[in-house]
Structure formats: structure tokens, C-alpha cells
Length: 252
Ligand code: SAH
Image (cartoon, rainbow, N blue to C red; front, side, top):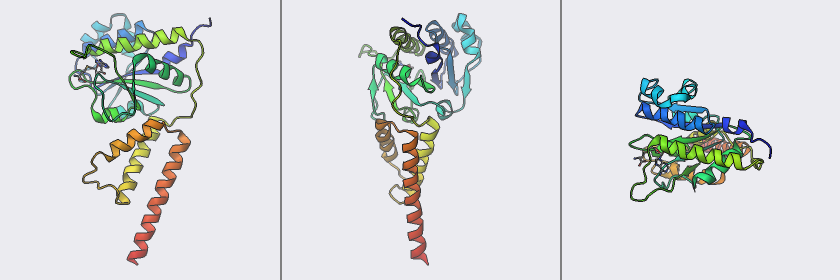
């Protein structure tokens, strides 16, 4: 058997959103390193760097030292081609709910071509709907339904173990079928969609309701390629221009 490709694990990012306890950040770094992962990204952590984080990281001080700190989740996911939220509770805003093993398969296959991410939520409140809306799918650890909330670093350990298990077991990966749009391209598209729908008076910016959330879910279900995003944005621009032209004609 050929040696598994270390670049695949290097392309998988563990993102911790709004972590409250620095000890959990350290424990997550240790969980990662024991499984061969190294890319830790912290979004708006309450306390970091911190001695408790260092103590809990133990021999994984290098993972902490190399951790990237971002102000927003969108920034952390800007260059990723696949981001999966990790959450105990099912939400109706994501397209798909995966088991950790399936998520590992998907992430490793995608990681051949581009960075991918697993996003973990805050210890008390989990992932917000807004954070989940930046993910293309959701991973749930099948836990005791009477008490399903794992400690944050324990959840990171489960996912990293699954990644390593799947990585070790398989020596060739299907090539990703499409040139997926990046997180940044998707967010620009959603912003364009919102602006255009407001200009077309399909969306009332004062009370958008759940329309935008539902449209995000629709597009996440199909996984958009770069080229498809460009086509959709071209259609939006054409509609905006037609609307502006019509408005100008009426007003002249
Ligand atoms: N009270 C929070 C739990 C937060 S636990 C809630 O109900 O969402 C901190 C993080 O660990 C979660 O945001 C999630 O990323 C992860 N986590 C804990 N238990 C999990 C489970 N059973 N499945 C998937 N992720 C889990």
C-alpha cells in the first residue's frame, strides 16, 4: 500500500468559533496533533493566547503557535471549497446532515484540490444560524439522545480520529467532480442575490424573513461551481439592468 498523502490532512482546517474557554483551545490543538492535523483557525476567541491553552495543548504547542486568529467566520472560510458545520442539533438551514465517517470521506476527497474546513461552535450556544449558513453541510456525532453535547475538544477529537481513520484506510481518492466556488465567491454571490432581489422588489429589505436562508440552502444542495456562480451573477446583473432601464423609461 502506498503511503497516504500528508498534504490531504494539511489541507483540512479545524475552525473553532467564539470559543469561551482557552483550555478547550489547547485541548483541541492536542486532539488535532495526535491525529496528524495541524491547521487550527480561531474565530474571535474570548481569550487567546493564554497559559491554560498552553497547558492543555501539552506537546501540541506548535499547533497553537501556528493557529490563525480571524475576526469573522467568513474570513476563516474565504478560500475553502467545502465547509462543514459540526453540531449536535439538526438544523433546517443546512442542506445535508452527515455522519463523521461520511464527512471525513468528503473532506479528504475535496482536500486534494483545495482547503476545506470543519467548523465547531461555542461551548454554551453552539453554532449560530448565521455561522451555519456559511457551511455547506452539517456533521452530527451520534451521541446519547438524553445527553448529546460533547465537550468541544472531545468533539474535535472524534472528527479528527475519523479523518485519520479514513485517510489511513484509503490510498486513492475520487477527484472532485467540479471546480467548486470558494467561500468568498459564494458570499459575494449571496450578497449580490440579496441586493438584486431587493432592487427587483422581490425581497423587502426591512423584513427579509427566511427567504435568503432558504435560497442559501437551495444552492448548498447543488454545490455551485465557479462557472455557475459567474452565470448566476450575470443573470442577476441582467435583471438589475432591465429593471433600472424600465424604471428610467417610466420616469422620463
Ligand atoms: N450547547 C451547545 C453545545 C456546544 S458543545 C449546543 O447545543 O449546540 C461545543 C461544540 O462541540 C458544538 O458547537 C459542536 O461543534 C461540538 N459538539 C458537541 N457535541 C456534539 C455532537 N453530539 N455532534 C456534533 N458536534 C458536537
